Amino acid sequence: MIENRFQGRFLGVLGGMGPLAGAFFMTRLVALTEAERDQQHMPAVLWNDPRIPDRLAACFGNGEDPLPWMQNGIDRLVGMGAGAIAIPCNTAHIWYERLAAATPVPVLHIVQSVLNALRRRGVDRGRIGLMGTSATLGLGLYQRALQAQGYECVVPSAEEIERYCTPCIALVKTNRIEQSLAPALECIRLLRDRGIDALVLGCTELPLALPEPQRLALGLPVVDSVDALAIDALSWYRSESA
Amino acid sequence: MIENRFQGRFLGVLGGMGPLAGAFFMTRLVALTEAERDQQHMPAVLWNDPRIPDRLAACFGNGEDPLPWMQNGIDRLVGMGAGAIAIPCNTAHIWYERLAAATPVPVLHIVQSVLNALRRRGVDRGRIGLMGTSATLGLGLYQRALQAQGYECVVPSAEEIERYCTPCIALVKTNRIEQSLAPALECIRLLRDRGIDALVLGCTELPLALPEPQRLALGLPVVDSVDALAIDALSWYRSESA
Image (cartoon, rainbow over all chains, first blue to last red; front, side):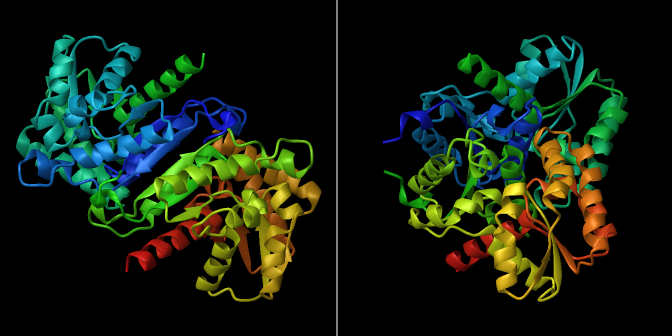
């Protein structure tokens, strides 16, 4: 029995995909909160489970299904009392509908959070450059949502994804973050050559590859899926606490 | 009932003291692991509960007791199946004996981790400069452990702690990390003037104030209590997995 005073809303975070993105998301929840003392921050629990089978291998048909593993994490978070779930992994959202249907609390959708962030940046139309994994982009996760809202999508070709996005993400995942900037900038260069009004970092490793100073230097609105999801999670907490 | 394949060892992390230190600890667990893919990392769960009452206010006699809140977090982590507990907050270790006695799995001790790290750095004697909160240093948490191993401790005076350590930690806790470097360097300067062979960052906010390049520039062994605890947590996992 949990004592009454220890009850209270908290966010459940299904992480581990990869584990650095999960941990980094937790730091962003804190950094994006204005607070003068610890007690003003949102309580949050991170289930950082890197054992979840590879999402790309599953998407392309030859890997173990990650869905039961993701649901296990969500179930444990809900079992602890999480009032909403955030999943700081874009590719995982390929399974979003099934996860949300099996979860008794709200599951935030990272693509919806990116749409919200684009609008906050004043980008409510135009050509949006997308970066992400071969699965996220290949299965049109962002393209469907953005096109439904009237945006045009500028997406690297399958070959360009393999040449720039995939190694960039892999370098972050293997703790070689400084080396990940170069392929990210190469990809951005080719998207800009095709004309874009804003850029979406549609993989939670990518914001680590492109730090704030390099992002500002682009002179282009950049929407970071980690921060977009964190902002929506904090909004959930404030609205539920009110 | 949790399916068998979802069982397996994981680290439970009692965070929230402060929440950035808890999240940062999770990033360090990942950064300190050599891995070529997500699945090679240690599963870990972070209970990041910033509602835990202020540790300093409790130590100095006028604040709510944080112990039941800390035990609640540990109990929930153990309830999820955590195989060991890490607490990335030095001040919280004032309550270590009571927490460990009430917990059926190992609870790592951050001061022991710092001792282990000093020895790994080849510092097995000499004068150790200490930085930390007024409670950690005032109650002699490090001094007792280090002196028992034959080290001498060089500790800022109560007034110096209030002038340098306290604002440094407060700046990290309020997301003004860039401003936190100056008071950290001031404190280090006065410790060095008294002659030290190594420096211990005995508060989990301090490693955020003093980034790697500034640390290297000191030309002095610096032991970071966040990394020390992370290394011991990873050792626990490897030894238990073997």
